Image (cartoon, rainbow, N blue to C red; front, side, top):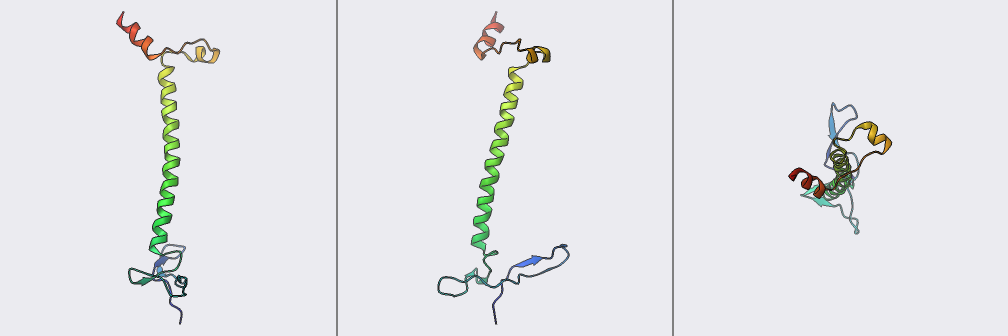
Length: 108
């Protein structure tokens, strides 16, 4: 008799659950791999699930940082163009002042 995975999975409609029907993962010697005293297949093995979760999180964080950087650039563009009309922006008739120039002008 083959030992099966002990993870509970859900059917495609999400109405019922059942035990995974995949066979248990085996080590190099052909012995079943047990984690926490339970047998798992290679998909549901807790150490593998944790590793995949970390990899997925790192990929998501990288994507999120890209989005944040884009938003920071957009915000900087809005601040730099504040007070400049759309027509001037389209025609190129504008000067972006440096931070020092704006603070010196307000002091006078």
